[in-house]
Every structure is written in structure tokens, then in C-alpha cells.
Length: 110
Image 1 (cartoon, rainbow, N blue to C red):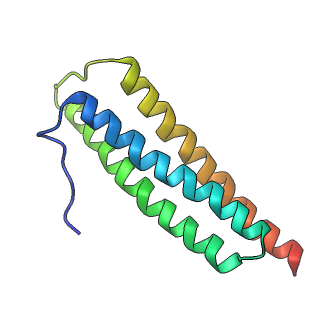
Image 2 (tube, rainbow, N blue to C red):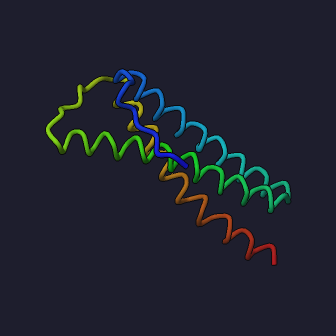
């Protein structure tokens, strides 16, 4: 898969891409818990995997932003960027939590 760059995007578009991928991941993570509760374990773990793919896209954007700033390009601060970063980081936390909960719940079922 070709690595996506955001060089031609505005700062607002970059923020929205970060929100988009993080939001998709968050939705899939929460759906994963619901599917597990409904005894659809295989689908629950598949949604986890899909969420990880979405988060990888968000992480790539985040990492590119860090690289740009480290190379001297100052990122313009905005409320939208702050929201995007918050969205990304909270989704990363949810991913870690769901990643621990599903195997734990699975062991309780056995």
C-alpha cells in the first residue's frame, strides 16, 4: 500500500483526515464490544483489526505532522487541530482498553 502524504492539503483538511480516521476507528472499537456482547466474537475481533487499520492511517498523519515540525515547519495551532489530536489520542486509549477487555471477556466465557 502506498503511503499517503498530505503535502497538498490545507491544515484544516489534515485535521479533518485525522478526525475521520480516528472516528472510524473509535466506531469500530465500540461496535467490537457490542458484537462481543452479542456473542459474535469473530466479528468483534475482525472489527478490532479494521480499527487498527484506521488508526494506522491516523498515526501516519500524526507522524508526518511531527516530522514536519521537527524539520522546522511550524504547525499552526488551531482549535480544530487540538480537537483532532484529542480525538486521535482518546481513540488510541480506547483501542488499548478494548484490546485488553476482549481477551479477558473471552476467558470468562470459557
